Image 1 (cartoon, rainbow, N blue to C red):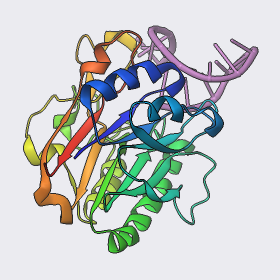
Image 2 (image 1 turned 180 degrees about the vertical axis):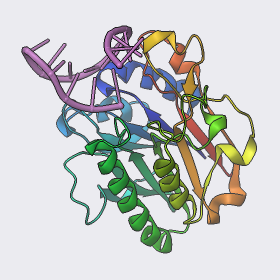
Image 3 (image 1 turned 180 degrees about the horizontal axis):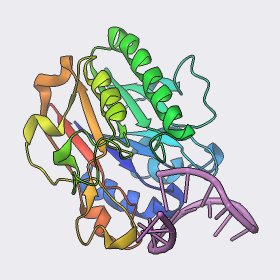
Image 4 (image 1 turned 30 degrees about the vertical axis):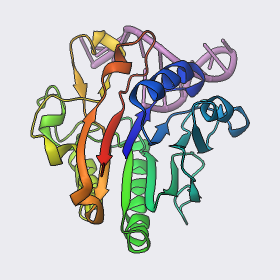
Length: 257
DNA sequence: ATGGTGGAACATCCA
């Protein structure tokens, strides 16, 4: 089962790319972030035509998340973090084939020390507390999404710039990510690769993709119970090369056969 | 130190 996460940066703009990529890559389960669509405008019919069911929660202009599953039922859908008041649509979870799928669009945080940064850390703490419970109920879990945190120096093009005081790599952010991993979750990419310089996001500015000035901030995490079945993991750079792309590339993990 | 590019929506906010 191929499970993938992709920040599409507007599903309205990126639907043709999503359709093309679903057909080429044929993932079984997909988590989307930054759909930027209110629910009545979600293109569930167009995705159903490709064999994908979808569940989603969105809003205009910002945020928005969805889970797609090919030829499988999507059950036990959870919208948002239980008990955490949040106007921003950043979380959707569901059960597919007995696996709990948690799809996160983690707060960006703007800059270290800002209100948005404080919100990011509060939000990550709430996710941690929720997932601690969720893992008791659903030991087989994949947590995926745009984490807006690069796990370590191998995951940034320039560690001198992307250092312990910089947004996306700051000490508190990495500590918050470690708190998630300490629940019994594993960065699938690192199960199979020690490589530095494999990225999932490149800024639109300064020709960052052409120069490969990126970060790996899109992650798929697998729980202890799935660890032995995580056969492969990677990032599909292909859609980032297409015309008018998202600034993110899909991250994926293969579970079982 | 600043701004650069792209999306949404239409002056800026967000990333």
